Every structure is written in structure tokens, then in C-alpha cells.
Length: 479
Ligand code: SF4
Image (cartoon, rainbow, N blue to C red; front, side, top):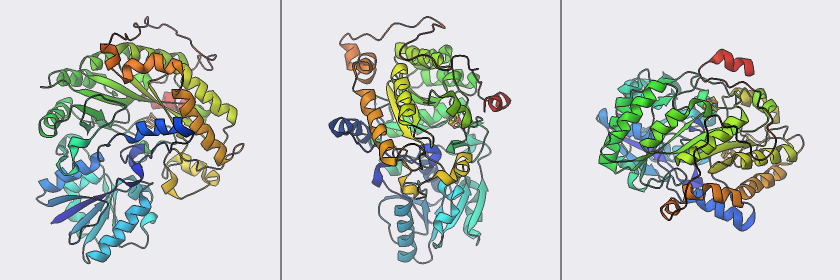
């Protein structure tokens, strides 16, 4: 069969992020400074979504002919596969119509979280909604093709090690780059685990499952080796929402990454309390260059309200300092634009971000993801259900004390005020531009163990318990 994986790069969406719902890019408000920040968002050619690379490998393994089509609909395919993001949904609906009209008798399969949570978004189109993990098509493709049901439940992959390695060849992998994480390119995506056991009620990663599935470190390392050899990858972004759940596997993986034929860079995403100094050192020694963490807000009340397990603020600061001393960049997410936010509460988030001073601070506007508890909880306060606006950089809620325009202005202000200041530059420049290190600009010395470094505003919640991921009862207690 001739199978087309349809995709778009219009609207600058990173489809892999936000649990597969996709995120947009900072729109660049705030004059020339805003344009400078936007440039750093736009300069990358982000890797294609990992799920498409899995699907390419799966369909080839099943003996089909696979094509990747960007922003056009080729005529004559047997099957068209879509993996829509919230933001590109209108474009994808148009492409589905076009495929069905141009090639009568073809099948259109819609996969991914948008298909999972928002089947009604495809009303009026003669498509099949594949509900569950798209990689299940390795085992269920025939069932799906034979089914006359509009929605086919496929479940999730029981053993991730049974999947073939992703096939990046249709997607121009030589162009992939993620500049905020790496200095070496091209960049591949890889996963050691899926799912999360925590319960942040706005999080799209736990819609499909509130548990974790892990791959064997040997399979992950073998996939990375293949990525280096076949596609020339020199860096890898781990797409686990919570890397490092299993310490033993992390150390084993570090050992295997250290034995790869080429030294590579890699980045991970996790919670600060999972990444102890010994883990950081072991990973740094074999190429860890960047860690993404969610700090979200210093407001304990807000965190508790949305079931986010808080981490003591001195731990967050110490973590950033330790990473910096080890030469690891930190990319921290902060959330602004909760319905009850005020100008003051948003400025408090900004002040806190500056005090923690990560290499990159990403200010996300609170976005209600369909399928999350948060979405249902604040349904009445959602200003628009037009998901093409759900970029995480656009206000989409009704705010009690602010207008959407004020939220937008404060949002742009957060970016500008964060980056255009000396303390950010002096602390982070040698990490962002490693050439400076070669010219003699030294990273700061290692902080003392358990040193309670205090900079900036007063510590608002140092007495909070540190919650260990995986201990769900403990997590509920703080919720
Ligand atoms: S820690 Fe919270 S935000 Fe992060 S993946 Fe888990 S549930 Fe989602």
C-alpha cells in the first residue's frame, strides 16, 4: 500500500511538545527586544514528531511504501495518516478534505492526542479516528483498515522495546536542530520512557496514562548508535516527560552512552527532585548539555490548587547553580495567566525566574488542554475553544483581574525583562556561547553540597515537603 504521512511546518508548531498537542512560538511582542527573542525561537529546524519516525519504520516493516508530505496532498495514496496538533487543526482538516476529494476510496486515519480527546473535531469528515498510541498500528493496522467504525480503540504499546527503531530518512534529518539545548547538530529525538505518575491536573502527558513505561537502556543506546551512523546525529533530545524515574537504568544508560563510538550531546526533561547530583554528574560526563524543568510559579497556593507537587525554592536555585557549575544549561518553564492572576502575581513569577536565573526561562501562558482535569474544572472560564490559539503564547482564558491584552503585554514583558539584564548575561553567557569558555570565561565554582544559596526576593515556601515522584499518596497529600 502507498501510505502518506501528512504534516505541516506552517505556524511554527513543535508537535512533539505539550504531550503531542504541540506548542507555537513566542510571537515577538515588545519591539526590537521581542524580535531578538523571537529570532532564537525561529532559528531552529525542529525535528519532525517522533511518532512519525516510528510510523515510517512500522509501515516499512509491514511492507508498505511510505511517503512524507509537507503542506501538500499527493493524489493517489491508499492511506493518509494525520497527527494533528491543536494549533494546526484547521490546516489538517483542510488537507483531510482535500485527500478525500482528490483520491476517492482512500482512507484517512487520524492519530495522536487530538484524535484521542477531541474526536468531534473531525465531524463532517469521512475519517477513521485511531484512539490510542499510533505505534499500535504495528499490530492493529489490519484491524483498523477492516473496521467500519468511525473510532477504533487501539490502546497503548505494552512493551516499548518491541517497537522498531524510528526511521528518520523521509524527514530530512540532516537539518534538525534545537539550539537552546545543543551546540552540535543535527539533533535526533529519542525516548527512554513514556508517561508520568504525578498528577499536575493541567498536564497533557497524563491524559493517556498516569503511569510510566520504560525501555531497556541497551535498546535506547543501540537506537542512538544507529542514529549517529545512519543520520549523522550529533545530539539527541530525550522526549521523556519525566526522565530518570528509575535510577539504576539511568546509570546503565549513562555507561552505554559513554561507550558510543562518537561523543554526542543530549538533553533531558524531568523534575528537579529526581535529578540528584550523582545523576547529574554521571550524565554530564557522557554529554548531558541541557535539562528542561517545570518551575511554573513560586506560588504555593497555585501549585497546590492545580495538584502540582511543590519543590522547595532553595532546591530550585541550588539545582540551577549546580547545573551551571557542571556546564549544563537549564531550561525552566514558568506559567503565567491563571484565571486568578493579577499584574502583581505575574510580576512575582518574573522576579522569581530572575532569582533562580536559569539559562533559558520560558514563560508559558496557561492553556487548558482538552482531556485534562484542568480543562473541565475551568471550562466556564475558557474564553475561546478555537484551539488554533492554544500556542502557550496566547491568552485564551477569561481573567478575573486582567484583560487578555494585559496578559499579552505582561507576557512579552516577562521575556524581555528576563533576558535583557546583566545578571542573566554574566551567569549564562558561557553556557549559551561555549566559545567564551574557550576564550577563558570560566563557569562559576561548584556550590557546596546542600548550600542554601539565597539570591533575590524572600523565600516564600521553604517549609514545603519535597515530594518524591512515584509516591502518589504523598503527591495527593500536597494536592
Ligand atoms: S511532573 Fe506534572 S507536568 Fe510533568 S509530566 Fe508529570 S504530571 Fe506532567
